[in-house]
Structure formats: structure tokens, C-alpha cells
Length: 201
Image (cartoon, rainbow, N blue to C red; front, top):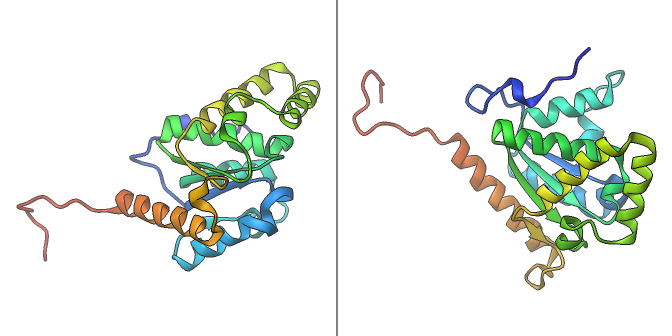
């Protein structure tokens, strides 16, 4: 069965299932960092997709992840040291950037103990080794598309945990959650005309 593509819909008629999709490397951050933003999102009443809770047993993993990405208003990408090691993370990244282009999905990068410039320019031994390994398994064409998505995403304005202003992890997370809440409020705000006709008070 052919996979869905973001180009089949537009932001105006998109049926959203989630407020936020978080793409992260579980091996790096699930228990040390990512659990905290998920908990903060829940406390703020934000409906987020978390793969270890929302994936249905017996379903194709990638099909379910793809649907979740496409049906999320905002995508948060938690870049960590071994993010590019994971084929799944890179697949998610490619899909997220596709949805940014075709659905105007808001994409927010979060750089967790990694240098954004290294990701933009594909620097670092671990990153280079990961792409070489992926090329052998998935081919140059596929990996080139992942490289392009990585450069594009890492060039977006986001949050850097190594920034001196973000020494406190709790404040770092709070700032991100507040921004997400403000963007969701903007997206769901109903603008009413100055002199509405046919609308009861």
C-alpha cells in the first residue's frame, strides 16, 4: 500500500490529531532529558505524540509514525549526539521537513549538547561515520535527502542547551513549552469581524 505524502493536503483543510510530535533519539535522551518535556507538555494540556505510548501493537511502525507526523501541528526535533545514527530518526526528519514545506507545519529544533553548526555542515567523526554506514545500506540518493533535511532543520532558529542562558534545564524546558503554547494559541485563535453578521453572542 502506498504511503501517504504531505503533498496530498494543505494546512487549511488538515485534520490535526496532535499538537506536537517530538522526534528524538531514545538511546540518547529518552530518560535523561526527553521525558521532562513530555511531562511538561502534558501538564500544560498539550496533546503530544509519544511513540512508546501511542504506537498500536501489530501496526506497521513507520506507517504509524508517518501519520502522527503529518497530523501534528508542531514538530519538535531533539538533536543529540547520536541522532543521525538512527535510520528512524532520519526518516522522521525527512518527513517533518516535507510537512513543513507542504503543510506549513511549525518545526522547532532543540540542540541537546550538540553544536548546531556541526549539524548544518555535517561535521564530526560520529556524524560522518553514520552517513557512510547509511550509504552502504540505503544508497547515496536516500542519504543525500537525509543530509539535505538535516542541513535545513539545523538552520532553523531553535534552542541550544549549551547556550550560557540555558544553564538551568528546568528553565530551558519552561522556555520551550511557553513558546509552544503561544504558537498553538496563535494557530487556534478565532478572529471575529468587527461587525459580525448572523453570529449569536
